[in-house]
Image 1: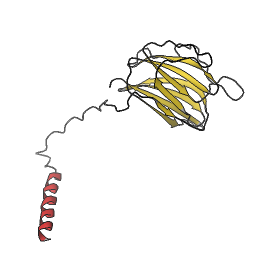
Image 2: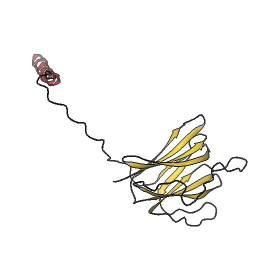
Image 3: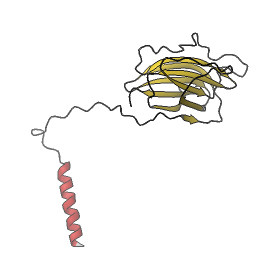
Image 4: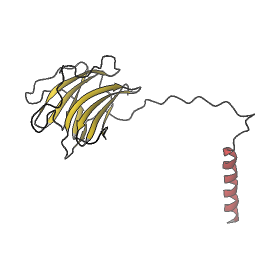
Amino acid sequence: MKKLHAWLAAILLVAGLGLVAPSAATAAPSAVPAAPSCHVTWGSQAKTSSSRYVPVLTNVRAGRHRCFDRLVIDLKGKRPGYDVRYGAVYTEGKGDRVPLRGYDMRIVVKAPAYNSKGQSTYNPRNRSNIVNVKNFDTFRQVAWAGSFEGQTTIGLGVRARLPFRVFTLTGPGANQSMLVIDVAHHW
């Protein structure tokens, strides 16, 4: 037992010596912190979620970040169900193919773009380019595929089949939520 205590004391002493900082006179200059890595582990397979809530789509917007491009779908109501995957995009109701610049990503949000009275809550001026993504690294085009029978489809043209993630957030205001799609710049 005495040997065990002696070994533990020795280990603690060695570990403790490593924690003692050198004096200011002998301290080495601090290293510049490395830039955050853009290594992502998201993958490129379909992301889906179901929800019993059916919010209403109110806006679509996009932003550029250092490691990814972001698409945000604003909603009035609680978090929606969704299905986001790479693949051809077709218009809601009619089923016509929606041509996109780049690699096709289909975003289906379980939220209509109209209220319970059938009045539009979001109606883009230009269905082929609902968000300006001209100088984005990954996004090439965001297109409207329509809203029908309680769901809305948006086509996202991206540079290549790249990893992506999808998540929902509450807010920014009361009874609001957001569906967020991030597509990485690289693997």
